[in-house]
Image (cartoon, rainbow, N blue to C red):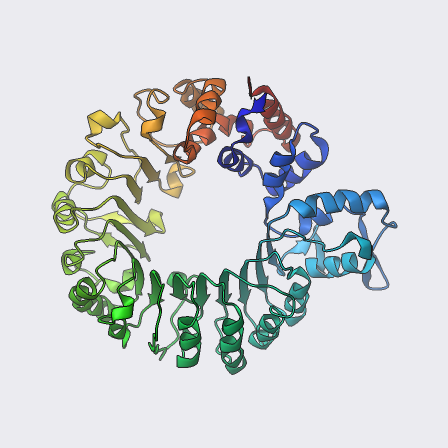
Length: 542
């Protein structure tokens, strides 16, 4: 006997439906959860509050928070069981603990460290990823308690005075604590000389780094030279937080002494593109396979156009191009919108992703544009066209993107098509009728005004599961979900097939359609937990 839902990808997708409080309650009261299920529930915590809830309540005494009762072996055993499963933690000091105003979680965690028996060992023995968002120096200092030798991924986001100095001190503790990272992401918008001095030394010790994301002001010769000496570095990104959502500091410039990047495959940077042409024409840059560029002004957009020919000539292995464009990039009151003529030299690209950010974006996609794209990129396999926020997009004259058949006509070999624009109705038919020969995933994003976004995966593995039907949008009403579920095979039959697939990832979103009725907004959390637990218990395969 085995659980059909022991497939990790399937379980992970189902558990993401429940809110964190429901997951915590289920983990404590549902005896049916398997050890594997518990690991998935606790693998990624949106905060450190859930495991802290497993201990005694907190009360305030003499302006300090203390546990209301003594902590016994049973309390620590329950606490240790779940913290041992935890692989990822996200902390934000702006959140309060259990609704107690002025009680940040790091203070509670300090109390835990004070009372924890030394014989229990590390609190997070298997922690792999830590994301720490801090606005005060005191909380960032306590992040050191989370740095265990098992951590391979570290993200730090700080905003406030003297935060960069505290971040530099935190980075200097990595080597003494035997923390060797594969992924490092630092988001510090304020310039700080102390951090720039400590970064090269930190990078020289972190020889296992594979991906690095740093603020734009850190792209100095010393820092980039240190990055160039990393033997396993695959991805280097120069962003500021979510750079496409943040204003660019005036006068920001980059230096590109790229040295000897022997293994770099992906480079991401935000404009200005001043001196960015130095990345082209270098023999050691021929390994680049993925390039992400953000443009904020019309001048930067034109500069990108002038670089396209050089990009094609000097990056022969480039297969993926992502553009982050802003509404300011387009000239106001013109119907031109986004055109692709300047990027035609990139004939070898197989993946194109375009995200346009701003308001009242004049997207001028017509059938001629789509045909031109198909002629420019004959090897295209993955295509995503996005606009954010989607509810502000307006169309120019011409046929809108609502017709999937237009893409099927010009891109018959697409494996993935993503359309995240103001699309209210997307006719979905069989693969044969739409003209796609090998489409594996069709993602359709609707406007927020049209209800929650519906993501639908269509895969050759799922032939026979979906009946020919038309899905307009998901209004998340029980009646609509019930009707939608009738177009699927039974959950038992689906699980039977899922267990036999060599790759189930292509059908994960259909699992969500099968289980949406287990987490409707009209049900209390206890009902959701019982229903989900019963569903897992029922789905057994001999």
